Length: 276
Image (cartoon, rainbow, N blue to C red; front, side, top):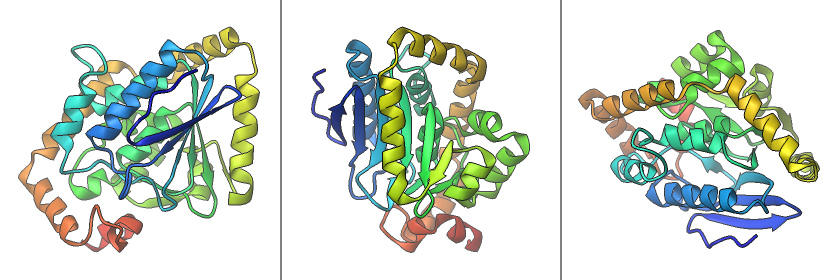
């Protein structure tokens, strides 16, 4: 399989497993460059079946994806709109495409994933987290926004209604152990075991007959994924609140406190939200 060069994702194909390492400094924020690369990667793996499993991880030890770049919402949304049909014009629709991708997708979480970064985790077929360093948080409600890229639909299915309420409305950070307990990740493992565990599982799946793997994935998705219409509704709510003046004021306060910088605000976002 021949992969193109991406600006924000480094790739390495090994025995049918494509290691896709997110590298979009300074913080791995979701912007139009990353969205463009994710679309291209999905296009490439759909066109060529050499990558049977894709493992997403991060080149940044602190951040998997902290959230979207709040200064680039219009730009990345415009790029996301190029991925599908006339109704698929959002990040949520792109993540739905990720869930339905030809390869099996695994997220390997060794840092912080919040907001739409956490929603990318949920869109993957499986998630494995570091006990020492993984952090998951849905920060949107605490910032005055709405989780519009899949969290509402996915968390209810992964963790149940009550836990979804607590994670989304509380806007607190969860460590790997708690994320495993409530079902957000398949397993949380010590750093010394995490990569080897995921690599073994990924290569095992990549070695099985492709037709059987793809059919099983398709039918599990049919039973477990939300309706596309619900994804569109949630994306619309995010866009509405992103233009709200009170949300803009709260985001402005967070920017003054170091949001989108390698600061305490980004490192301890859940705690900082509770201080506002």
